[in-house]
View (cartoon, rainbow over the protein chains, first blue to last red):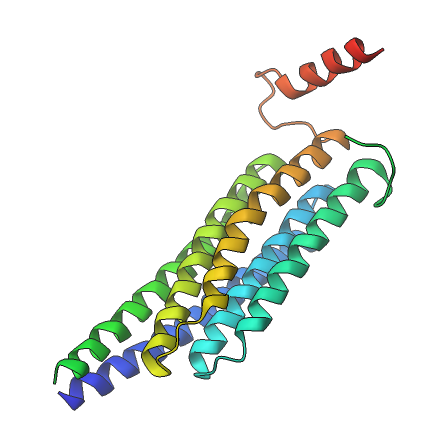
Length: 103
Length: 125
């Protein structure tokens, strides 16, 4: 019985390593798209996806370190990624971020 | 006895959730690299990334419940927040791309949003 439990713990550790490698690969691909994007909105889309990948990386790290202190970090990365996406979209659309016309 | 079996099953469940989330996030990133257009890249980056992050956070929630026996509401709140804000960000980014002059990839289909913008501007003059 304890043998099966340690075996599943080992399976979980190996799965976490595979997931870290997969998300690192995904970050490398998105960074390639950020550097060589043909247009500016594609770079912004890739930056938004990088923010979401960082959230996933923090979640995986909270599993790997068996801690609860990274939950605030996950929420904060999500909020900052959303605000930065909105700011970049406003800037690409109108040239200014804070304006007065209502639409 | 029964608690050990529950721990085994929950460990396997966490591994399955984390692996599924990694698969969806990696496929979203491959889509962002491979798709030909801003709008199709937006489609890949928004939907698949949302599903993958939901899977990974559900896995973290289950693992924290298993190890510390706490129910972390912040992780569920993060899932809800991502599902609320990803479509809003995608909509803003798509409209910004269309306004800044990025043409859609399919040339033979007409651009209905451009037509709607023309009608709106003509009506407001």
